Length: 116
Image (cartoon, rainbow, N blue to C red; front, side, top):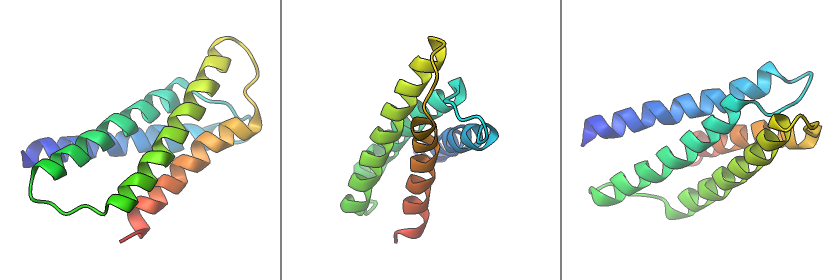
């Protein structure tokens, strides 16, 4: 079970890297990339699986923190989905939407690290 948890944490980090890395690499010409969209999916799914694993075990969770992170993750996913669909259709992705995707992902990472 511990090995599965470590694999999920690794995948969670990869999702975060895809989100924030895609945002920073396109900072001057903001858009939402495929990697950001897939990173948002990875973040949401692995986060939910990690919470489930911890709940199944004897781990303690801060449910308020998890709730805040879930709201942020859903916001990132929705923004990434809208931006990805626009980019895929050849439409212009608004600057606010592109920066909202990456910026909210960065805020979610800060909440995860700084909220104890």
